[in-house]
Structure formats: C-alpha cells, structure tokens
Image (cartoon, rainbow over all chains, first blue to last red; front, side, top):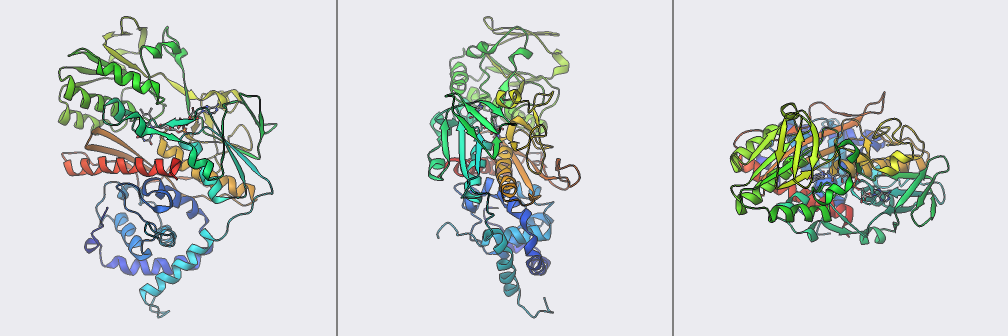
Amino acid sequence: MTCPDLDRVHHGVFAIIASVLASAGIAGAADGPRSVTVEACTTCHGPGGISHGTMPTIAGMDSETLAEVLLAFRDGSLESTVMGRLVGPLSDEDIAGIAAYFAALPGADQ
Amino acid sequence: MTKTGLTRRQALGLAGAALTAPILATPARAQAGAHVVVVGGGFGGTAAARAMRRIMPEVAVTLVTDAPTFTTCPFSNLVIGGLRDMSEIRFSYDALHNDGVTVRLDPAVALDPAGRTVTLQSGDKLSYDRAIVSPGVDFRYEALPGVGPEVAERLPHAWKAGAQTILLRDLIRSMPQGGTVIIAPPDNPFRCPPGPYERASLIASYLSRHNPTAKIVIVDGKDKFSKQGLFMEGWQALYPGMIDFVPFSEHGGLKGIDADARRIETFFGDFKGDVINLIPPQQAAAIVLDAGLGGSGLWCEIDGLTFEAREAAHVHVIGDAAIVGDMPKSGFAAATQGKACAHAVAALLAGREPQRGILMNTCYSFVGPEYGISVAGVYRSAPDTNRLVSLPGAGGTSAAGDLPELRRDEANYARGWYANLTQELFGA
Ligand SMILES: Cc1cc2nc3c(=O)[nH]c(=O)nc-3n(C[C@H](O)[C@H](O)[C@H](O)COP(=O)(O)OP(=O)(O)OC[C@H]3O[C@@H](n4cnc5c(N)ncnc54)[C@H](O)[C@@H]3O)c2cc1C
C-alpha cells in the first residue's frame, strides 16, 4: 500500500471511476455524510491526510489515482494488509467523494 | 461519458470541484456564543475538542482534564516490554491551546444535565450548550475477592498508563530467573479487548531476551479472547512454551487474592506468581455514572448518530465510558467517535440534521517487535434505531498462517497508526 502497484489494477476500473466521479458530482450536494466518513481516514493517514508515519500521505493526491486505488482495494485486485477490510461498505459515490476531498487538500510539500 | 463528450480527466476534474465545494465551503454557523465543554483529555476528548474548533471555529471549547500531560495506553505494552521509553508515549496539551481550546487542569466533580453545568474540583462551574464526555473507565475492585484499590501498589493493573506502567515494567525486570508472571484479565466488556494478550506477547519478548526460562500464565476471566488464533499462532512461532492461557472454564473464577504471597486462588486451584498483573473489571468513569448517565447499568447508553446519552439531552458520551453499538473500547474508536461527535454537535448547534457517516476502527497488536496483527471494523448507525452497527462485507482479522512479510508490514503500520493518531490528537 505504500506504493500501490497500479499495473495490477484491473483496466475496467478506469471506466467505473470516470462514471462514478461524474455521477457523484451531480449528487455532490448531498455529500454531508462524507464529512464524517473522511474523518475515519485521517486516524491512520494523518491529520489533514498528511502522514507522519508508514501510511502514505493522501492529501493532495490525484483524485483519479486515489479513487482507482480504493476501488481496487474494494474489488480485491490490489492486495493490502488492512485497507481491503475497510473499504467493502463504501459505495462508488463514497469512494469518489473521499478521493475528491483529499485531492483538494494541500499535500505535504505545499 | 460518451454522451457528454468529456475526457475522463475532465470529468474527474469537474466532479472533484462539485464534490469538494459542499464539504469545504459550507462552515455551519452556530448559535452566537455557543460553549462546548469536553470532559476528559484522552483519545475521545482531545479528538472531539480539536475537531470542534476545526469544524466550527466560532464555538468556544473548554477541555476539562485531570493532569498536565496524557500518557497513552496504546504502546504502553511496548514500554513494559522495554521497547519504548515512557517519554515517547507522553503528550502535552500545548497544541490544543494553540487551536484555541481552553484547557482546564481541574477535574470535573459533577455534571448536571438539567442545569447544563459541569462543576470542577476548584468549585468553578462551567455552563454548556453541549457537553462531550470521554472520561474512560474506572476499576471495580469491589468485584474482586477481598482486595481494594490499594492492591495495585503490589499487583499493578497498568491499565491506565503512567506510574502503573513503570511499576509493572520494573517488577518484571527485577523478577528472579525462571520466575512466573501472572496476567489476570477480566471478563468482557473492558478497555482494549486484545490488550492483555499483546501485553503477554511483549512481556514474553522481553523475557526471551533477559529471562528465557521464565513463564507467563494468563488466568483469564473468559474462555475466548480477541484475535486468539493469531496470538496463539504468534506465541508458538516466537515464544514456544512460554505463555500458558488458562480459560475461565478451567479455573472457575477468582476466589481469593493474596497480595503478600503473590497468589491467586481460584475455584479449581491456586496460581503462584512472582509478578501479578491484576486487571480489574471495569465500568464507566465516575463522572458519567454519578450523573445518572448509566441508568441502572455500568456504562452509558447513547444514540449512535449524535452520541447523545439516552438518559440526558445535550450530553454526548463517547469512548470507553459508552456502549457504542458494535464498536470496541479502543483508542482508535474513541478518536473516530470524537470527530464524528464533533460533526454531530456542530450540526445540532447550527440547527441542521446530523449526518449519518461511516466510522472505522483498526486495533493493531504487537505479538513481537516486528510481528503485527490487526482486527478491523466498519460501522454506520442504523436508520431505524441509530445503533452503530458493524457493516457486512468488511472488518475481521489479519489472515492466519505463516506470513512473515504481512506480520512485518502490520508492525510497521501499527507504528504508523500511532504516529499519525497521536499527531492528530496532540501534534502541532
Ligand atoms: C495496555 C493497553 C493497550 C492499549 N492499546 C491500544 C491500541 O493499541 N489501540 C487502540 O486503539 N486502543 C488501545 N487501548 C485502548 C485505549 O487506551 C482506550 O480505548 C482509550 O484510551 C479510550 O479513550 P477515552 O477517551 O474513552 O478514555 P481515555 O483515553 O482514558 O481518556 C480519558 C481521560 O479523562 C480523564 N478523566 C477521567 N475522569 C475525569 C474527570 N472527572 N475530570 C477530568 N478528567 C477526567 C482521564 O484521566 C483521562 O485522561 C489500549 C489500552 C490499554 C490499557
């Protein structure tokens, strides 16, 4: 997980993310619950998504890459220690929302 | 996609902007001059206090706690095993001051839900619009045969970190060669279900280096424990024959405790130790039960959407003191609840509906310094009852089997988790 092996991400996932992000955009006004959900991420990935430890920094990450990785954890095409056990219940819209949220935060070098 | 004629990247960019706006750009407005009082400066309380200031900066937040620094129970087993120093698990509240949280080192002695006040030891009375209470646990020595709290000076619990952690560590260090450490964990529910077994592991790690003929006997108040298969697999791999687990059904319960002789008497026989780690049964901390928030029980029932106590309006109880649906009593859970609770309180202060988000927990345990295992869970409050239920298709423990790379990775992630969470709670 520190360095997701994107080659192993199934190709079909790209199409899903695009449509997920597009449709989540339309439903964006209703994304209140996600403001609670993203708080779960920072407990491991660091305050504001900036990591001070082993986990990767997710703030400022490209939304597309982040969504691809989360989808790949969810469908099992990307192996993980813990992430695969956490993302199962996330909907496509949750994943798109989380990806967009952290993409918009300033990264570690900003 | 083909319909709109956008490229994937364009679509992503647009979606990102549309999604981000409502999360980041709609700070809810609270009623003028609202005051949130947070009781307890541990995992739940500091998470809630800092999140409250971040989400709703116009709200005044006071954190009431009982010591100038906080020593974390997480990683205190590493201190007992000689793998970390106490100074590495102790944190100050300076960052909370800098966030604009008023920190009062003046323990709360009474909580009055009807008058909406918290009375401090000094006699000061704080009025609140909403109280967030995360005081952790108290020990129920009255549930143990013939001993009181003073027994902890000789048979330490080390279940609140600090002087007790050092006492247990030093007793183990000065134990004679070939001696026996007894760990006596309580029945469920208690703080940190995998904690006693991580402790057994890290004491074994220390003993295998310094006292290799010593033994550890776990005289348990229950028959099964968290991550049992993984722990036992690890003990077999790292410390074969050193740790003996005696389930409740094999001893029938504690009948007497002789602190001078360092002996535990059970219904089916006695256990003699050189060091005894007596972990008493637990209940919600006094401030919660004294305010009547436990009803007729030992823990506080709450609403899983708002964390408001079932027994009192405007008082939100989180962390170990509460029964939070299916969530375990862990620091990770308490911190996640603290943040979710701050969102709920912010919504209520602004007259909005609280949002039903997803909460998570991962409890990492060290079986050895480079051997980590975990149990995870994902939770959401049920729309009909607001109970925080474990969601299907998620959670569970690390894979079993001889997987040295996975164990090493999880030990690294455990350290990463600790670094990041303590940064979120206490870091600048
Ligand atoms: C050995 C051990 C290992 C553990 N390891 C892990 C782990 O690896 N991962 C994990 O997630 N969890 C772990 N835990 C569990 C974790 O420590 C608790 O679940 C967590 O501390 C609960 O947070 P809390 O906010 O409810 O209580 P606490 O963190 O205990 O905070 C409560 C604070 O409130 C203070 N307080 C109490 N009453 C008052 C009052 N009246 N006025 C003012 N202040 C008051 C207390 O002194 C304390 O500072 C471990 C626990 C133990 C014992």
